[in-house]
Image (cartoon, rainbow, N blue to C red):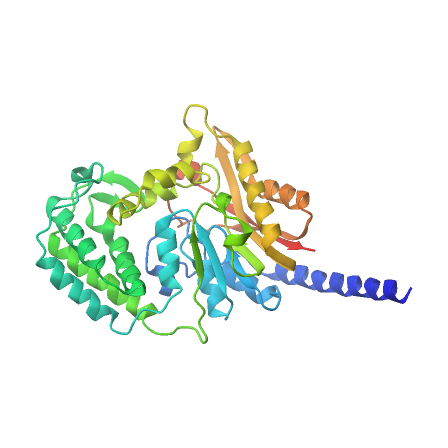
Length: 389
């Protein structure tokens, strides 16, 4: 009898705590209309449908993280969740199929050396004297890049790849990646059309140096006390096993790709080609990519449900008891039919015996842009806070 009374009291205390957390979550205005998603450290590289930092920051401030655990983002993208968790002294784990996403996340969660800009200038000096042949293995390269631009990028890649220090090399690669679209014939990051631009070979080197200076400004010093490096896994989340994740997870904060909404692989296509990755491999395995829904024997919403079921199964295995799993997800339109992805996540959460702490709608800022706007014009998202009991 005494043991039963103790258990009952413990459950009652837990219920009181959860109710208090629910109240706090519902008191917050999750719209964050003046978001800083393109400011400071989060501005160092373009990324589509970028996760706004206020969401993970507020969740980390509101939800108690179990002692000795880490924060996981299984779709880490540009590393927003990782940076926000790291700034609060929490170890982090990020997973993403896209190698550009992993490069951004890796660089943003490390400190660059104090002489990073000097090393960048050395690369530029060597590249300017480099007469290597242009990398012609990139498909349709002459359509998207002028020949002198091609040469400048080729020799920069060649010199950067010779840098021995991995953190420095990654920083230089990211700086170059950040300017690829700007020096190409592509109209903009969100407009996949070729236009005439007044860009020269000299601009490639000058833009690259400015990008390196910007990186050094935000990452050339220890931004966070007791900064912890993140574990970044460049792999499809559908292929990740619990043994891949090296830390116990106390909180998951993520925004999964919506079916038929954004083309992450297309957004970074030529960045991947120039840095030695194959975007077609990313396209094939990318969850939600529009191409999967407009081909013969195309995917359906059932494929997304199956994919999220696999993700949820993994999360329930790596998250500790009392830990939280937070999703931000919007709706999708597939062949004219609307689907509420938050309901899909809710049903899967219940299937995996997770407790629904809160489901809160938020408005998305109108200025957010990406490819396929007719398919991705999402005005609202839902924040789902789940707990493993």
